[in-house]
Length: 477
Ligand code: UD1
Ligand code: CA
Image (cartoon, rainbow, N blue to C red; front, top):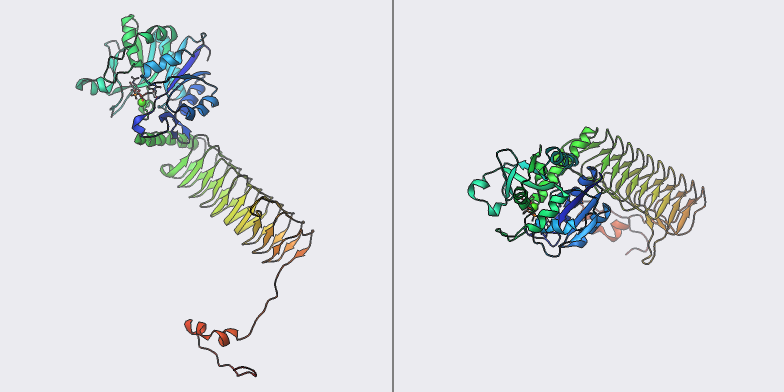
C-alpha cells in the first residue's frame, strides 16, 4: 500500500507482567506479541513500518529485522502520545496516512486494518479508531461518543468517573491518521492526567479543537481489540490465537480431534486429511504433509513431515525430516538433522541424531544412531549403538543397502559396513566389513553343568527350588 506507514508502539516495559523481558517480546503461540501485529500490518499491504522501541529493545530487534522495519528509540516511556511522536520522526515524507498499532495487541486482523483506513477516507475524518464492545472493559480507555456517532473523547480508566467506567465500548489503541493532522496535533499534547503521561488518545480533543472529526470503527469480533497487560491476559491471547489457528486448519481439511487440547503454533503448516490427536505440540517452523496421523504426546519442532507419515504416541523430534509413509514411535526421539527415509520404521526408544536412514530401513527397538548414513532396507537390531564419540570427536558410521545388524551390536566409528553384510548379535565391530560378509565377535561360550547346585545352592533355596542330589565325583570334597 503506497503512501501508508505503520507505527508500532513497543517501547513499554509492561510492569504488570513482572518480567525482565519487554511485554511485546513475550511469545504468543510461538511468536512475540509484536510479531503478530507486524504480520497483520504486512498482510494488510503496509510495507513501511516503524517500531518504537525502548525497554529491552534488543529482544524486539529480531522481529524488526524480520519485517524489514525501522527503529525509533523512545528512551523514557512518557506515554503513547510521546511514543507516536518518536515514531513519526522516522516516517518517510511520502507517507500521507499512518496506522498506529499497539505492539501488545496481537489479535488485530489485516482486514480490520484495511477497514480502518477505508472508514477514515470515506468519512473524510482526520482519524479513525478501532473500538470494541467488551463485557468486562476494565483497564481500557473508554470511548465517549458524540450525538452524531463520532468520538467525543477517550477517557483512560484511571481518569474516568463512575459513569464513564460503565461504558463498555473501549479503545483498542489502533488508529488510522491523516499524517498532517498527527503532525500538527502531537506536539500540543500535555501530560495533565492521572498518570502524568502524554496520551495519544488526547488527539481526539485536538481534532475537536481544530473543528475536525475522529470516527470509530467497532470491531466485529471484540477479542480483536484485547491487549496483553498481565500473564493471565498473555494466556488468554494464546487461547484466542490458538482457536483461530485451529479453525483455519479445520477449514482447510485437517481433523483436530480435540481443539481444547491441541497446541499448534502460528507458523506451522499442515496438509489436508491429516489428523491431530489430543495432547500434541507442533511448534516453530514445522511443515506437515497430507494424510499424516499425529498421535497423542508427540512434540514436533521445526520439522518437515511428508505425506502419509504416522507418528505414534510420544514421538519427540526437532529440526528433522521424515519422508513419505514412514512410521515412527511410540517413544522415538529424533534429534537435529535426522532424515528418515520413505517407509522406514523407527520404533520405541530409538534415538536418531544427524543421520540419514534409507528407504524401507527399520530400527524398531532400543537403539542409538548418530552420525550415521544407513542405506535402503537395512535392519537394525534391538540394542544397536553407533559408538560415534570417543570423548573428543564424533565419527561417522556407514551401513550399505540391505545390511542386517543383529541385536546388541556396537558399531565403533568411524566404520563402514558394505552392502548385504551381516553383523552377528552381540558383536563389537571395530573394523570395516566388506560387502556380503559375516562379522562376528564373540567370546567362547562356557556351560558348567550343575555349577549353581554345587557352588551356590542358597540361590536355589531362595527361589524355592530344591537342591538336586549330586553324585559325589572324584576329587570333590
Ligand atoms: C492504551 C490506551 C487505551 C487503550 C489500550 C488498549 C493510551 C493513553 N491508552 O492503554 O486507551 O484502551 O491501550 O490496549 O493510549 N508504549 C510505548 N511507549 C510509552 C507507552 C506505551 O511504546 O511511553 C507502548 C507499549 O509498549 C504498548 C502500547 O504502547 O505496546 C500500549 O501501552 P500501554 O501502556 O499498554 O497502554 P494502556 O494503558 O494499555
Ligand atoms: Ca495495553
